[in-house]
Length: 266
Ligand SMILES: [Zn+2]
Image (cartoon, rainbow, N blue to C red; front, side, top):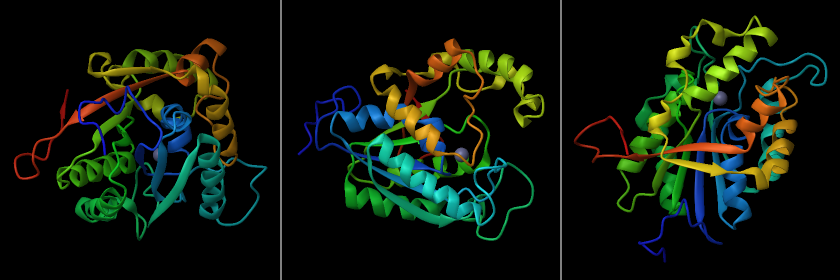
């Protein structure tokens, strides 16, 4: 039985249950990997729900070779999950929508939010987790926004709601990242984005975790995604450390499902 007075994010205990819901293989490692590993080393049983197999990812040339990118990426996901301490991986069976353009058949964004929420609700009812962790979607990827919306809807349908936590990248950190990326990868699509709108406003962050102790796990998980270009490749040591050893989180407070579809950030 959960101690209702306990803060499940600041006081993680052995046997706690966490559900992490992401859109693509690598979101768990490039995104919220340090928070996952941080929870796992303290004994939380972490289940990962991944909506797609990342078929629209940009495969790097060389080590992957030919074949179905989704198969390759599922393998990478499962190995990375093990590195992070995730005990169970559930694939929801949608196809990667891609960053933009026409939606492929079966794409995550072609499925109604309510339908994706149904799948998450099934896991929430089975697991009864203390925490549901998602990416905040502030990078603008439509799949990240879609799975986030589904997570919010699923939580509003629960009687005993888990703490919904969004993993965020603060604007101040992303501005530093963009400056370095402009020199490293002049062709990246992120260059079209307005620096002022990048990431999450720093004042919206509710919790900052020092995840230095699990850096090796995070690095190991990132390294498993060989088919993908790591967003941290080539960054200065200082900026890489800033990304990988400090995680920024925002607790989400939701109204009842019948009142408003929008989240309120604490
Ligand atoms: Zn993603």
